[in-house]
Length: 414
Image 1 (tube, helix red, strand yellow):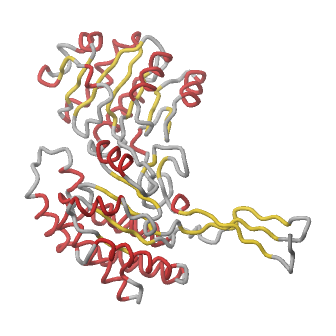
Image 2 (cartoon, rainbow, N blue to C red; image 1 turned 60 degrees about the horizontal axis):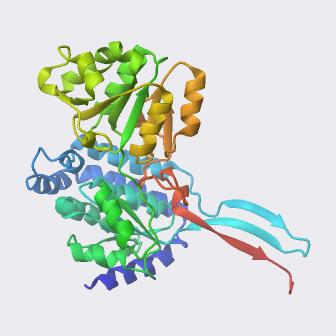
Image 3 (tube, rainbow, N blue to C red; image 1 turned 180 degrees about the horizontal axis):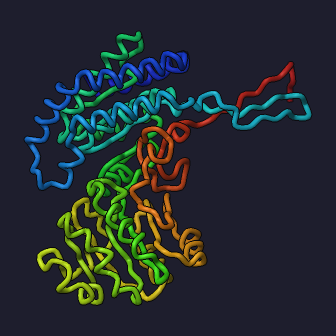
């Protein structure tokens, strides 16, 4: 099948979705969750074929890996989406003009959504469930690293769609070769919007080469600033969670900024990280503050490249700053505008940070691990947008819609 045929099939199928009753939509999603659990062994077998082709030392390995627990979580997210109210047909605004015309601004699907992603097989299910719930067809372009996993998952999606009499082309998985990516980037007239999910290099490539409108979902270069007024016990728990809960995700902590007058507390803040063998890349002041207390084999002098790096690994940079203003300047230079946090008890410091930092999600005294569609009550997410047009932050159901104006009259002419 030529690439254009994939796109034509998806476009044609997308036009059938507006006729589907939400009861059918929810039945499909509930059935899909059941099938994920029912065919877990088949999915894990396929995933193991992918894992055998990747080094366990590769930062992408954890993103690629599926377990029975992770499959249960994926299935639960599908059920969460099914339980959410559909935003479609929501009347966003309504008015009546002096000439009697009645105007309504109505939520509608974007149409056909293309998603390019790397070694993240969970994206296959997340994207389908969110797109299907919002009346969008999904054109999926997964990476070759997850080829067998994605094929197993799309097979299950198609089985469920067929069972319920829905056109299977509302979910299209393109071949994993690079040529398919090029075709998708040029699929104007078929695909309404592209969403890249993966490394910064992938996102940059899509943005630079796509003829289809792009919503950027970002790499996360994430900072947490520990202020002069920061609570040490809160800080210790927040830093540990943000760095180690799952290092391969985009909301994981990459750089700790610490007020110079709190360097005596630095060891206590990072001590728990040693149990997870987190390598710390510290500037001179921070290095001297913890030398001899943090394990020597895990403590390193920082280099300029360590700041502004998304590690996706058990690694963290530490930068000493004189005050909040220097922390804000550092974040402004190195942030990817994903998630940024402050640990402080001074309300003025908190408000300044929350107002000044330019990011999709800003936190006061909480872990950045919460930047997630499920945690934000959106069900699953299609990605976390780091741009400002159309959507920003975790993209749930409403972010996958546009709107149209419906105008009702009774013979008015102009």
